[in-house]
Length: 252
Image 1 (spheres, helix red, strand yellow):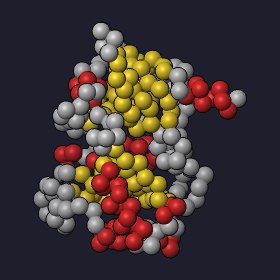
Image 2 (image 1 turned 30 degrees about the horizontal axis):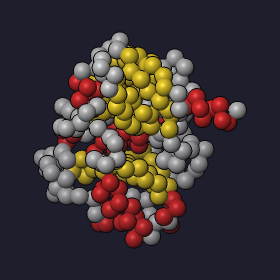
Image 3 (image 1 turned 180 degrees about the vertical axis):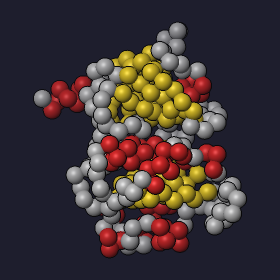
């Protein structure tokens, strides 16, 4: 039975685009209907395959942004200027179009809602996508697990899910959200532009003695730096889970 389940997850399925919505000027969320979807865990990803009329085929991996419920998936795709797949997904794909997907994939970078420990989410750029799936899963299940999100982005206009994050952090459910801007900050912002550093982590993340589980996702350099800073601050490396992407990682 277990082998059949794994094989099922590695089978290509044809999903149908049910809706699209812009998140930023370069990023779009794609809502997919997948009638035979086997279900997923918050933090997993899927492979997406595009095939040209001449038979040329290419595929990329994208994190699932939606909570694990029903037969609908959401993928949020940010366009890479020289990307082969992302420009089509974020600018051409339309409601009613078919899309081949395979998954869900991944078992390490996932949040278990039955675990009581506080959760620290740290995302860089589009690395917030699987973290958003965890936030949505927590809210959908009515969990009271304390969550903190540190979201690093180039500027205010590059933030994904801004309105939803604001609502979720203001509804008294125990989610806190902190933004770190690396290039441009809003007017009267209390912190100058800059990368996530040890000082910021010490100010707004769970302390090591609270034994949080930390999920860090983003470009390779960002993830490696943040993970090293967490370890240097005294966090148990076994409680730090990372997911990274970059030019060599196949994402576009």
